[in-house]
Image (cartoon, rainbow over all chains, first blue to last red; front, side):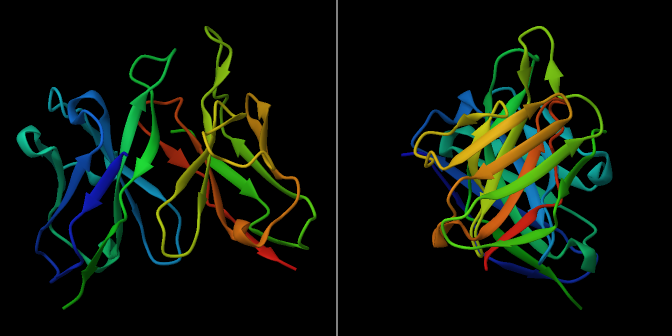
Length: 124
Length: 114
C-alpha cells in the first residue's frame, strides 16, 4: 500500500534551518510528484511547493521563494523539504503529499496520499 | 492566484441529518477542453493528515462512503453529507488544482454533531 512516512518533530531557534524528510513506499517514487503543505495550529492548509522526483524539477509558492529547497534521493525513495531563516510564524505541521498527474491541463496534479505530518516548532 | 472561499465556517448537524458545505472559487476551475472541474474535497480529522474524498468536483475516491457527494461547476461547488455519522466529525476543505502546480485550499468548514 502507498505510504509516505515523515521524519520526527523538530524544535529550532529563530534564524535556523530545518530539513524534513518524506520516505515513500508502495509505489514507484519517480512516477509521482511530491507536494509540501503546511498547517499552523488551528489554521488551514498552505501549499508550499512541488517537486518532480524523476527530473528534480521544482516549483515554489511565491511566499517561500528564496527560503525553501525541495530535493530528493531516488535511491532511497525519499523527498526532502528544507526551510531556512526560520521565524516563529513557521511553527506548523508540515505534510508531504503525493501528486498524481491528471488529464487535461498539462502538469496538473491531485494530492491523493499524505504523510503523517512533522511538527516544526520555532522558539527561542 | 485563485482564491477559494467556503461557507459556513462551521455547522452542527444532528446524527442522520444532511450537512451541506459550499465552496466558491474566484475564477472558474472548469477546463473547457475536457469539461472537467479541477476541484477536490478533503476531510481532516483531529491529529490526522487530510484525506482525499472527492475529485473532479463529483467523483468519489475509492473507499469513500456514498453518503458523501460533490456537485457544482465553474465557480460554485457543494459537498453534501446525506446522513451525518459520528465518524464524519472533521474539518472539510475544498481545493482547486486548476492553476497547476499551485494548489489553493479553502479556509475549511468544521462539522460537528448537534
